[in-house]
Amino acid sequence: MKNIMFIAPPAAGKGTQAELVVSKYNLPHISTGDILREISKEDSEVGNYVRETLASGNLVKDEITYKLIEERLKKDDCKNGYIIDGFPRNLDQAREYDKILQDLGYEVGNVILINIDEKTLENRIVGRRLCEDCGAIYNINDPKSSPKVESVCDNCGGKLYQRTDDNLESFQTRYQMYLEKTAPIIDYYKKQNVLHEVDGDDTVENVFAKIDEIIKK
Image (cartoon, rainbow, N blue to C red; front, side, top):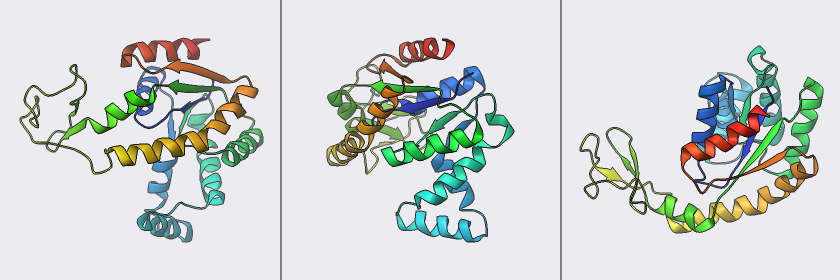
């Protein structure tokens, strides 16, 4: 089993696809966000630094992120493959990640790029609504996933709400950041012949089927 990395713009369904891969192949899901949140609970110099940095909304120093990722990848459950999520975010991190893999004797594996139209992403984010009681997710811009009654959850009757960052301005900022930071990573992995592109403008099941084909090869 090869290691798997997902690259995708915001709201492209990367998290959902990662969960499906984990479920089918029983691979560990390495999330930099989860690693940082876990270490922030420790009463140590690094734990205190990460906790204070996250609380202030700032980014943790790359050197610390690299060290934590390397320590996580050294664990036995990663030896037969893993999914890495939220890293690398820019070209410098991609190069450093290569060094970490080289030291561990690992390969990058499959880098899967989920392509999707910007307007589709915009509609997904701006139209997203969540139930405050059961957490169900709807989208008022998609007839297939819109609630039967506006602002009311089909499952439990709870009130639906819109996240504060699910707005057009926030999406455009995040999308532009993705384009600026991620485009060089796409070219970087394309040159290594490890990049696989998948059309994300399809059903969850169909997108996963395409990803599954890549993994099986």
